[in-house]
Image (cartoon, rainbow, N blue to C red):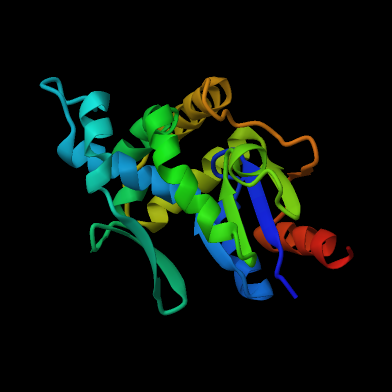
Length: 224
């Protein structure tokens, strides 16, 4: 029996990735954190495609996409992102990547570059993907679609604690403004904007723990 394909979209810091990983383990699915892929491209751009003012040169990035090889490797049960055979799982969570990822992610060239690899992974089923356009663009025929949201203050607190846990210095107000700006860019971009799929199940987890959110999502999958 073919295992399901699950799409989880939503705003930054609603727990999409960590929740998807646990659901993947529970249902024995493959998890793909598409946000990490865009962060990986952004990290590459920050290392190799800056202009004279220290900003990302998009034209340079576009001509360099063929040099980017991103892959997830299993490290003791945890999928770790590698860029050209180098572990960049911590680097992609830094503030400088967060400040630039929405700019990179809204570019058609970048989205087209990553789209086919995401779809090909899902063809055989047994996949859960999280991002911002999974249910609307990447996997419109997914068996289950969920859209996660939470209040800006709750998301700010979660993101701040995540950074502190990684040993990354952070200012809570800067984190909040970064999230607000990313919400705006992600929702208003012309190419594959952050948008709830019409047939998605919406879950506001402002007042839910991660465990409660997971339990709720699993209840929808297992009762059908």
